[in-house]
Image 1 (cartoon, rainbow over the protein chains, first blue to last red):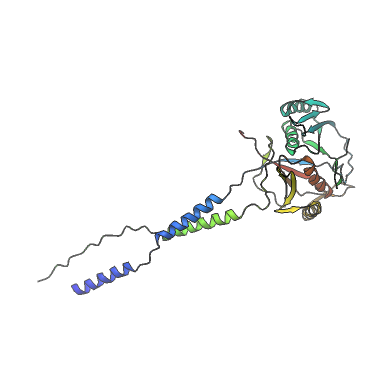
Image 2: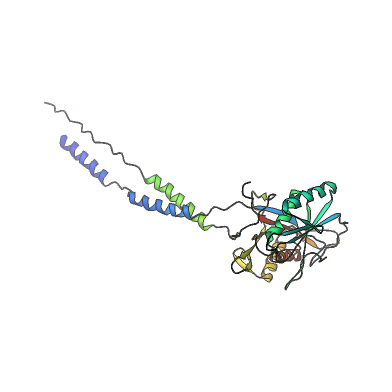
Length: 162
Length: 157
């Protein structure tokens, strides 16, 4: 009986030794690969947007409208100046975007049906156009149009040159 | 005489079971491999202009077309890029026409049908305004009037 038991114990030991083990070095390799891909993944930055609508009654395919334009302000932007961008509100110079917001707010408070036309010089950096549009949004002016100009190879762009 | 059979106690192995852990790690690896490859095809690496009143989007609207206007500061060259493809004006016009045809339309009495398609213009902050005007003009030409400009939040907000 002891002999039988011993052989059974020996069989169990042998069975244990032949049991398949995942080598620990494989997990090291897999961890390294994982770290590589974690470090290489770029997180997408959340973006925002400013909604606007192009004017339908001007441009290449003007759709005539019967709506009488309300009180209209023109924001002229010249971003080509080497020092600071020049903003003009109804031909009056504005020091910076904060003053533009202040003046637009006052105008919007007195004339609720206010319309704004943004006129930018062709070579002005786009950031100043966005600043003007942002100023309109801060002042809660929804009716914002963009005035176009003759773009090389394109003929007239949207809007009329005034 | 009965012999007492000694019970031999074998030490229990305190081995760590790696089988299920390697499954988890493989899954994580697969996830990061796929995610790193699934870079948004629509978005280019652009320095967006800053706006305070920008609205965050929870979900991308269905059928919206994203047009990137890139700006190379060193060469002073701009490109219009849609889905990783650099487009000239004809290609841009075709893409806008296709987007307008695929989307819904509304029509004012006596006027042509205007498209309800949304266009998002991701233009670099320093790109000359005339380059963006080209895109806007083409949108108007395709009777697409609903556009939005991609912006980023100001630092410190």
